Image (cartoon, rainbow, N blue to C red; front, side, top):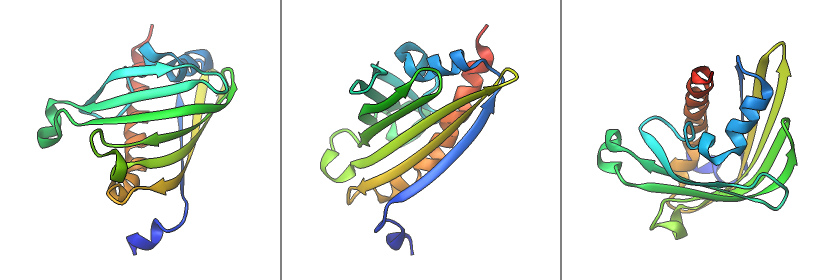
Amino acid sequence: MIMQLFKKTKDFSLERSYQAPIALVWDAWTQADMLRQWWGPEKTFVPECRIDPRVGGEIYVVMEAGEGMGKYQGTRWPMAGTFTRTEPTSRLSYDARSWTEGEEEGSTIHHVNDVTLTERDGTTTVALHVTITQIGSKAKMAAFGMKWGYKAQFDKLEQYLTAQP
């Protein structure tokens, strides 16, 4: 049953609202020093991050498993992409590929990401739509877990935004 799921394009969407102004949420998505504070699920950190939020610009983020990840500690998961659409404070789209470092050939997942921000009465809503277009032979479980990973990131984004002055 799961195998059939990956024969076609896999899509998922998430939406979360934050008690934060849209400019702050935009900066959290587009400034490397801010993004590295919340990107990735718990027990991971971001040792490398580059973002150039303009059409044709780069997004490059490396997640690394921390001590709390047990046998996975030290494992690195890079994501490299190119922005295809940027509308300051409201929309970001990028084509990307993610992989497990050292296993790029079989572990690469190609995905298209569309992030839309809207603000109403001081609350910013982030809508994320991800389309997975290609999954490496060793990446089926990773692709299946991407929605969970993004949900965890949204939790960390909430913690980050709440801590801002």
